[in-house]
Length: 141
Image 1 (tube, rainbow, N blue to C red):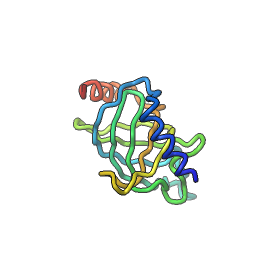
Image 2: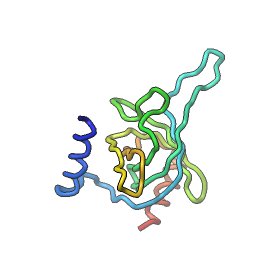
Image 3: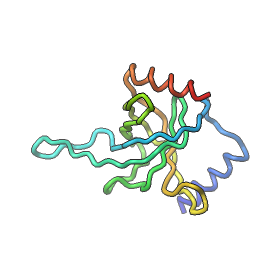
């Protein structure tokens, strides 16, 4: 049932309009994500499962991620207060950011993509990475 509700909301947005403030630009960029604040093992080593995917589009304050699974290990990628660490591969090198997933939907079999689309808000990024990312996004127009 939740999948049906998400699908209906997605279709409704196409007719009613979009609430986004920043203009999205189509961009296919590779990324690796993990859960923000992953736990450490008893020996002190970081335990960080990762998932690879690519972007559908980007804006200065948000990003659309396409992933093959909505689960990372036993953890759901989208949930209340969930934060994801994303290492995004720009043409000039990688940047890192923390994002808060806002919504997700399963991509249909008939679409060109398979997996899940996650719409996320960028919540944290270093000043230097923010500058590089903003330059990249504004250069897409």
